[in-house]
Amino acid sequence: MADKRLAIFVFYDPQGIIDDYVTYYLSKIKEVVQHCIFVSQGALSTDQFDKIRDVADEIIQRANEGYDAGAIKQIIVDHGKDYLDDYDELLITNDSVYGPFYPLSDCFHKMSGYDFWGMTKNPGAGSIPEHLQSFFMVVGERMLHSREFYDYWDTMPYYKDFNDLLDNYEFSFTKKFESLGYSWKEYVGLDDYLRMPTKYTINPYYQLLDEAVRVGKFPFLKRKPFSYSDNFLSLDRFSRQSFFKAIQYVENNYDYDMNLIWSNLIRTYPASKLLYNCNLRFLIDNRNCKYKHKALIITLNFSSGWLERLKQQYFDVIHEFDFMDGGTDTNWYEFFLDMEGKELPEYVCCINGRDFDLNERSYADCESAFFACLDNLIYDTEFVNNICQKFEEDTRIGMLFPPGYSDGKSFNSRDIIKTEDALELNHLHREFFSDAPWNEDGEVISLSTSWWVRGDVLRKAVESISHLTKTINDVVTTQLMVMLAQASGYYSGIVECTRYHEIEANNQRYYLNRIKQIFAEVGEYSDFDEFMSLANRYLSHQKKIRDFCGRYTHVFIYGAGEVARNVMPYVPKLDGIVVSDSKGNPASVADKAVIRFSDLEYSEDIGIIVAVSERYRSQIEDAIKAGWFKSQYITV
Figure 1 (cartoon, rainbow, N blue to C red):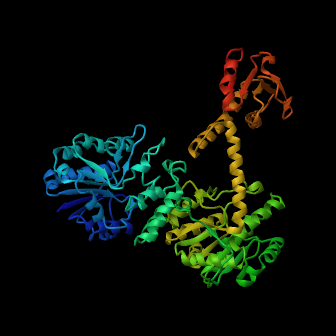
Figure 2 (cartoon, rainbow, N blue to C red):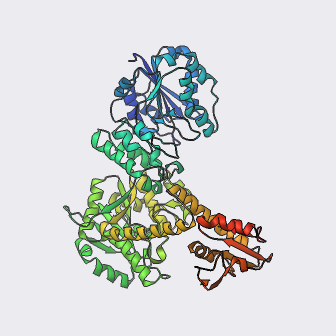
Figure 3 (cartoon, helix red, strand yellow):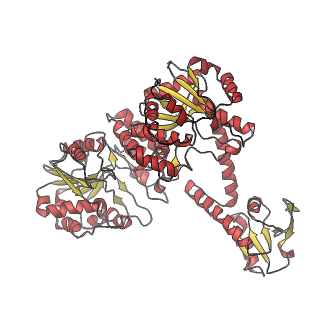
């Protein structure tokens, strides 16, 4: 066991803010080391500097040159080899994890005897070798005092390209020192899982997080798995079930304050990312309510017909809770100006008739939108009380929106979507709400202008809006409230009534299966990554088809199956369908005559689009190449 241990802790935050999860981690490191060097990859303000005075023995501020490896190199080289020789062990770690969930002394005790060790290893795949992962690595006395270890850092350049850093540090460190005769091991042993065949490299803290925490006793949660939108963490490579089971295990088995995690997430991720990253979708039942709460229901822009429908359909809710109709031909901005100074209850539901009273839509479409909005906000009195209770129990919730729905002309409705008001929101964000994270591309959690909100968030919104110098529309008002909620330490999510969800989940399953069925005719895929690749190729084929058709006077499709039928809408002028053998094929497809390819007379003005399943594709291409049309066809 080491008598004298040194730690190098590398920190980076674009805003230079040290969240409490970092100071907690540092305090636990101090329990197992004699000297901790905190390296900030950027300048710290005085108040941030003061946060770590008691948990770091030495604080270094530097430019973010060379990423984490550059910071480690600078500390080692500036302090010199003789300085390292005064210590028995070196811990190298950073701010990329939440935790630890139990004393780090347990880890050091288990791993004593190795020349170097890390928390986890990547088993490697393809060009990526097996290696310890660098976010937590410990170097023992024999290796720490060696000339090879010091020279490794002394000669390392300050990498400017992150991929170069990965190749020359993250991926190569383990093999280099193994080849020099130093022993190594990972703390979280998951070889039984890592040996399973996969086409991708496996990160235990991504794909095997539940196993890592529950079986391997991994004392951390990595921050990056919360970045659901990262390309490397798409659903085909990363089980969200495993991720959330691991979080649940930590909550149920360790005395770790999860608010440390939430405070950092809410400060650093915009609402649209948090929604999926953290599964902020809540199914609320309309049964078994044990509580009664006070709430205010506000309606706006309800025509007389829809207002009457509301009072009939949701009669009990209107009479159980306070109800206010804000009138028609107005917006939330103007309504909130009139609300300034008025008392508000703890929970408020605001419903905008413009979310479903759509002049350009049929009554059936409007009714679907009406139910999607109101069923998921005020289904009945028990449901409303259960929503209020959810706010009561989860003190981080600031706003709840109804889900996007997919009926009729609203099939394209989504929970996360880009708003046309991005420029105005960017300006207002910079001017008033810069403390809240925001996507400048305009990606928002919902375009709905109906929602549940905490009374204190609404009070702050009313006060903030009164300072604006011009009228803003309902979407902008809503998104400013999301920003304000997040700046106040709250997140926003999606709420669904279980009764509504039962129907909508069936609809979504139907749509998904239908899409899968169509693309199964286009090509083969086994996971989401392959499906998206196939879909993108298919979309690029549409442009390819249009460009091809522009070069020929006459165009024929080779094929009479579903692939051909899917291609037909993208052919501006289609002369007919050709097949290898008329036997077993229809006489026409969508009013276009079907003829044998051998009966088609050659002309340089004819172009042929091969649209068949992959099974027959090469055979047909060979037949075309053998004839006159060999340079006048494309395959889609």
